[in-house]
Length: 216
Ligand code: SF4
Image (cartoon, rainbow, N blue to C red; front, side, top):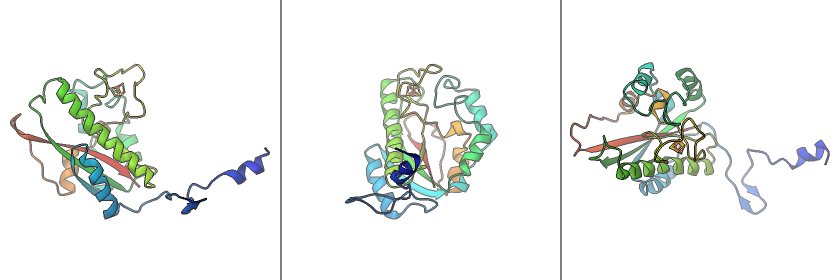
């Protein structure tokens, strides 16, 4: 086949609504998220324990140098997990990356976790559930035409009992960075979008967890 014939066979990315009899979605850009789609995500997210999903302007995301200090000092996942620093993009890359997005979704869930400071199976199972929820909604958004959809997860990846880092990741298709690993100040961002949050003082209290999906 000569090059001219090849070109003819390329299906345009912004394909219109029909290919043969099959309906297809066009890719989108800078359109935000409709109420219908938010509702659909909400129904799907509930299966993973997500109670609310809030759409907001990506400009409300606060990025700050100090966040990485918290990862670097005082967290056992630093230099031990593919979803955490230093395996994740540095702050200057993050600023450039965020400039390529227009909308973000905040995914909010809650849990009672008496084992917050312990490495238990129960805690890991919960973490994997929230993780899968974020990745599943990211995939749903891709299928809805948001080709740039990208999930930032809550808590270090726990898909493996012990992360393979620095050896190759065991589940690269599921691997995503955590919100904080991208130097995102979560509390500052929550304030910007009008969500009040407070420190849980007792392990018997209900904790909130937050993950995000970036969109354009
Ligand atoms: S899937 Fe496994 S190896 Fe990959 S980042 Fe998660 S815990 Fe680490």
